[in-house]
Length: 156
Image (tube, rainbow, N blue to C red; front, side, top):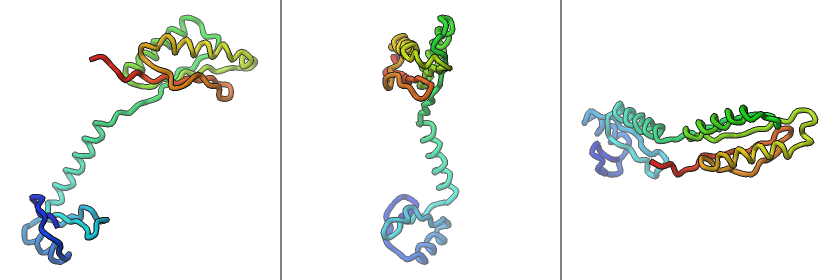
């Protein structure tokens, strides 16, 4: 049993703990039920729930969510379209997101896999200041992909 100030009171029966809590006008809260014997604390239950919610909120704020954005194109992408995709990727990297570049092959285009690999390598090369490839371009069915992750060291 732990009292409202956080001081260890001692080991006691449930009935004694409840009586002590009622005497002080507080609640008896089981903090860690797995411990032998279970640890209980005297405190206001409403305040306990409020502190728990506050702690959870702080943990959520500290979490960083990394999204994977996908940019899809064909193996015969034109220069202007390539530049548009490049600008989009730069915006995603500034936000801290990963970018998955996908080249989709249609019909007989699959015979020219080197065209898709060339485009993906060009993206990796043009964006090497902002991002690093997680692995080399790989073929999955009729799609060739590469995932680029933003570099960690951002200048302040």
